[in-house]
Length: 397
Picture 1: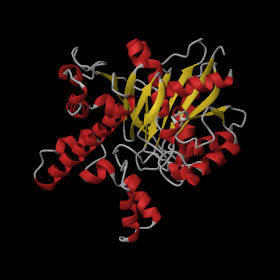
Picture 2: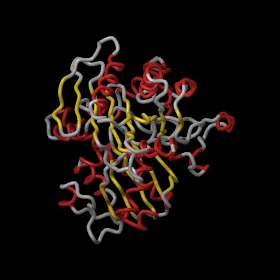
Picture 3: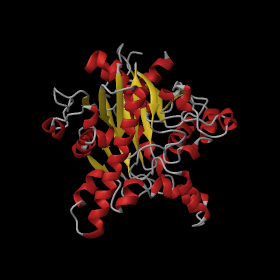
């Protein structure tokens, strides 16, 4: 594929991240040739940021901002081709349902099929499908590849897949899927390179971002994870509840007379750190208000305490499933850059033998545990875009 390039798109509701990879070498380089994002799509002040260049304001068509954002990215890509060609556009898709667990060529039928999973991931699923449809209409001969966040967990042990509902529900195809699989898949490449045989042992990866989950990995395979049927399950998140007593949902609908749409909006958009703190969905913002007077400070403290408690509780549960813990890895936006979150989590994991090196943690070092710690604690940047590009390249070969 001499001179060929792969464009990776990670499409959200108000942003599109992009990365351009050189497919010429035998081993696809981990770092893209160029990457960045368009953000604020649909808002009053959209902007464009790219590698090594200051973010700048852009104007997008108010009636079709998503189409305009994709066009902007294509125009910027065209300026960097220098005689080379895009051989594929690869997309991160959050939900592949029960049918899609391997990278798949994009067709109109695939897009229609994947729309049926929008209710399971409404914050994420619609937007790569919109991008696929636009590109399919405008460039029908350009290969597109869909890569699924659920795929890494497809072979979870049966006991981790089945929901405790009537067995007929299982036969209908409802199961625990798991998410953030592209991030966890990257760890199965990066961790053995850095930690050797330790990565083959009992590992828990904490993918902490605006969405958050944990994955127990053994023998480089997913054996348990905190997200289940939908991206609402498991850990408390930026605006999502995480695991919740279903009776609370029934109460809101029966007693408070909230509609299905109102409950859904609450669970996905008004809960989590934002809902409890009343301040922000970002831990780094909330922590600045912990010493504020009155209710503001109390809610800031409570939201972060609850956030950490849920992480600690689920790490304990996954360690029990694994029969112990050898390596704990923090990744994604919060996991990689919020030392105070890592410190509070590790403080409550001393019963597992975790000992944190405070100086290493404060500097976001790769290894943040002390030499005496029975559990190694690491910070490892994720690289979902590279995994997506790698899958696209393999599918095209």
